[in-house]
Image (tube, rainbow, N blue to C red; front, top):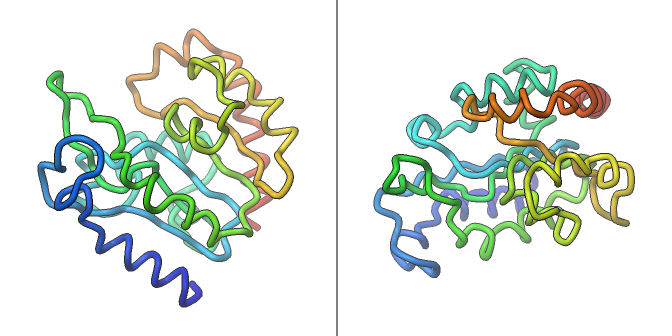
Length: 208
């Protein structure tokens, strides 16, 4: 990475704002472990929600069953997925946000988007494809092109992907690859039949 991107990544890794000086809601209840993989050469960026407990422990993105499914969707193995020359990974929240009262993950911390995201993506002008996983990533990267529900947003993928905004990378919106979404996948077979072949083709083209 260039010196400027290295410095930005170092600043992100050292960030403790959500624990020590939270700007939105209660403080993070545990030690932060920011997970973000910027790159000055990758043409693909995966933009998900936030690390879960396994990623919080490992410090490596998508080291969980969701990562297995996402790599299958993309048609690549771990060797390519974790090759920072070819793949960048920038979740909406860099740290595990904690659990809600039902045991599910809380939403991504808003501090990350407010402090870091515009700077990170401004430092990666070479990106050609953003894989926007889940509502939070879609809201940030798609703006008013995101629909009111995830299903509507993902179903509208052709209009978004085929008509990128000037000076911006193409976007492919995806549901979260969690196994909790098995029911969604069964109800929406068009996703695997229509969108995934395009995703795999785009990934194959851009990782060369």
